[in-house]
Length: 204
Picture 1 (cartoon, rainbow, N blue to C red):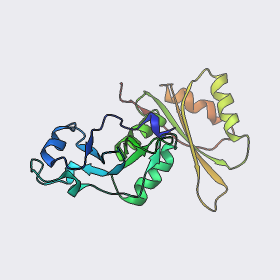
Picture 2: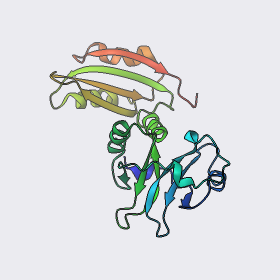
Picture 3: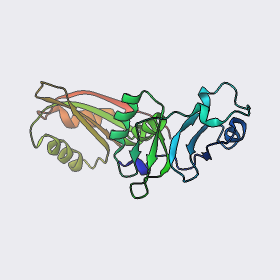
Picture 4: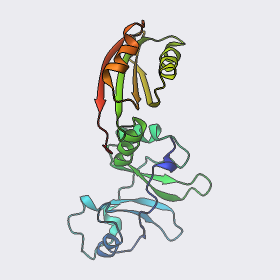
């Protein structure tokens, strides 16, 4: 998942010397953020108007610019952006074009959450299964084969391994709605199904 697919490109670009009032009026009320640039369109900082107390003043908006050393490029992975957001403790990161090294937008904590919702298929109705598996090749294939044999479509797959453990947690979301039927599929297998639950999804 790349930054360019989840970033915000429609944030306003304001030049140094612009007053706070004019810059604020250029922003979206739902996303009061702007990118500060110089006359050559070089990045100077991000202005988060949520942190500006006097939004209609005549002060130079550059006074409120956050000159962060953290940034990402269009083709960076959002996982990298998430790590930088955590390290910087900021809500937004500027996104640059690799070729021009000019700012082209921002990516935010909210964009990370949006990506997570899609990555987990949380917006779709279905059943989530959680497995605890040995961290060896072939474990996922056994589950996928059972899903295929029972004509169940997989919506999402996530996995992680805790440090110093030989077990891997596996989270699978499928488009089934019959809990008993899905649970029965794994009753006679050697796979360790830790939990199973139905999710209504955002679409109902």
